[in-house]
Image (tube, rainbow, N blue to C red):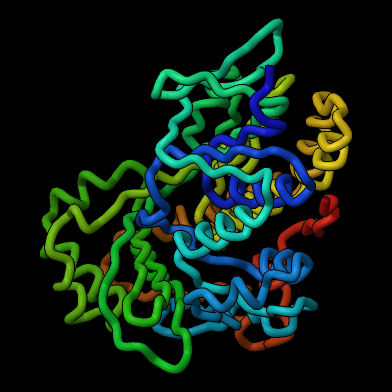
Length: 402
């Protein structure tokens, strides 16, 4: 017998949003998260206009934006010693036309706080899924590291790009490839009135500096599999290269005291061929791992959760068999996933890969025509802003409220 209507494995953005919306529809939902809290060094802290608009639809945007955050209205970059504005979100047809830079633990805590307002919502921390429970060809629950068996009418896998559940269920993955990895670290800064988040492209080097108020969240992009070579050159050489690439970090890079403060993100770009089996649906990174390009991963995962709730909440509340509807969730979300991943792959292949292959001899890169046009014609900046900020076929909340 099922313990809950829905069991969600993974308390990240997709899992928490799905849990909130399904509980709002009157369902009994349990979200399990293998960690004891959300206080970890997340890299994806960008809440895009498409996601903020969903919270406006739920009447929760003001409450969300009362949490600590910074607002980014434009995105800029540097190449060849010049600064360029590449995206302007301020003209998007939404109520919050900006990217909110919010530590993900604040965002997830907010979703948990809202979820607990509904009697059917249960969040269980320190519960790790280790496998699936399958009966007569249907997935009816999961096994946990603590030896428990948890059952539900529907299991939703939101356990990330290294999903235990998708592997246990035998869901095949299509690897699209990525030419880079990312080393993440923090450096101190003095707070400024304006947000100065920027990307820097130099010969053989790429860095993204995310302005988090009193510190820089830095993404140092390196060729795939080269992290050991970077470390072998020594921390002093790494600090010097940071200062050469981003002069505003000169004197601040010394704040890096050891390699344990530099976290490696092994970049993957992939997607499941099939997102579901009877009794199981995968969404978010468990269904499609995104490149960090554009910071769209969180927002695509949130969109998946909204689509899943729109399609499944009503029938689940009515006691219907939702297995025939799982393919509709994939069909709804596969198109935007394919488009965004195709764009990320093109950027990786045509821009990031060639830049990283440069010798890194200090020769200034020549800005391409497209970048010069974006900077020269401000109206064009609305195109990448719409693509990054709203995505492809953004979802709207249509799931019922009990």
